[in-house]
Image (cartoon, rainbow, N blue to C red; front, side, top):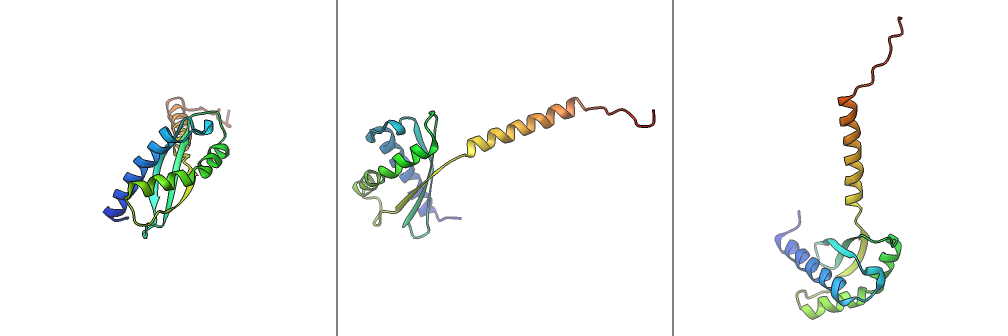
Amino acid sequence: MPSIRIQRFEKELLKLMSRVVSYKLRDKNLAWVSITRVKLSPDLSYARVYFTHITNTSHEKVLDALKRCTGVIKHEIASAKMMRVIPDITFFYDDLEERADQLEEIFQKIHQEEENPVVEPDETE
């Protein structure tokens, strides 16, 4: 489990990156992107940033747009003066919501099968 210090940095970076993506970046592919999680390495030199979006744009286009804007995001982190070392940022699509929807569908099917069991005819008749 990460230390409290790392967890605080993760929360602050999440807030800062969300503001930057929402208000400072002017890329049409980043219109409805939200940062969902930030995971820092123990030495604070690497950050895994998870995002999601609610547009018809493919995940790859959004990922490419975020990669192009990494310099601006790093500049904003440096301007905030919250960290001595600016971490290397890697973006990942957060498919947690999609997986949760798939599980919900599976649970609904199971629930329906329990309510309406399929009765198979006896082979002895």
